[in-house]
View 1 (cartoon, rainbow, N blue to C red):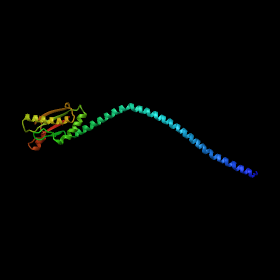
View 2 (cartoon, one colour):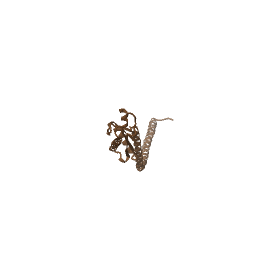
View 3 (cartoon, helix red, strand yellow):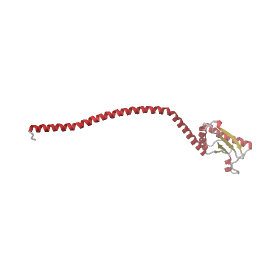
Length: 199
């Protein structure tokens, strides 16, 4: 086929136009598709957002309804845990409190142990403590019974000062009747000047 210069120019121009059209069409399609996808994606996100927001409202409502139950359970668990810790501390603390000769003053070094017992008793208002006062053999029987009682009441006052109810405490005195040690040495006599705490 014989092409004249005019036909050749027309053919090159047409080819360029077709190529240009072919190149711009995919770009436009992508743009249009992208735009369409973006719109579609935006619609989906809007729908999802709406669903999430509804879900959040629903779950918030459910959470609101169950929060009281969860709080009550949490408080009960914490109280139970605190009571258990307090009981362990009280049991680990000393339960025998010693006194100087003819004295009923609680020694400062025993205060932490008494506070541990008080903490347990405050958390367990059904628990009761028995404070048994003792004395060494010096003095009359009557005097030693009174001294043992004074010692027991001194320990009771410390517990009550820490918040323990008086109804949880019982004081009894054995005087010299139940010695912890037999003998006449000072160290043996000192073991008998005591208050024994038991639950």
